[in-house]
Image (tube, rainbow, N blue to C red):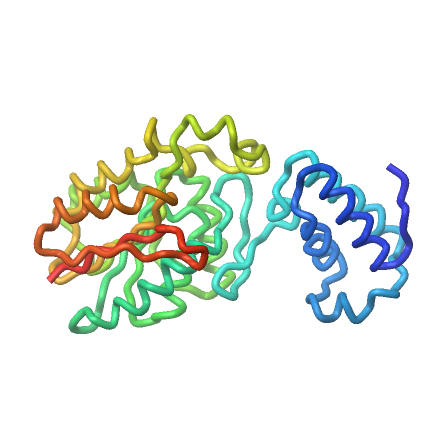
Length: 287
């Protein structure tokens, strides 16, 4: 592929056109170039007339080509921003999404209603560790445990916790089974479990299905398999008073909230909508 640019503004214009024509996000070029140059957005736009070094130009062309072929931008640069912090990511973990930031925003508000100190929180299916680490850093008084079924995911989470200075205990576990076996209970249980129906795979972008772990994406024919398991296991692990928070797929809110209400008849179950007006978070506040 010939390099049809020498300056930053020309590189961004070329990338935007190429990405759009290829059905990819046109903003990916800006993210990749900022990473290569070590510039934030304002500095990049202040240097639009800067001539790019040949080595940077060649790498930029190659990376844009990688994204066009389906590799997520986050895997090319090796990280994603979440709640104002940088998390390392790779093929073993789900790339943190903005919707999950909203799960934490609501959780932090609702925690204040729980009585007493020394609250214990469990993040189930932690992946990159984004939920557990962010909660610990936002609320250092919490005791945070994070689980994942995959040791490869936990390795990424531990790297992120160390880099960000978060004291989180990580353990390999299948949902809540280990806690049930040990008789352990928590004041707060959060999870962003797999919730995509397997049939949706056919219509999803290869950027997702070809590069993110399917164990973190898909959950049976209707996407609700993990929530069903949670309803069986949660009563043995959640303290009362306590707080349960789930991220769900858009359109699953009513079903999952009904499941929680049936499991905890005395609880206050609520659906929280994301910035786009979609039902993406379900909470159960237990008296």
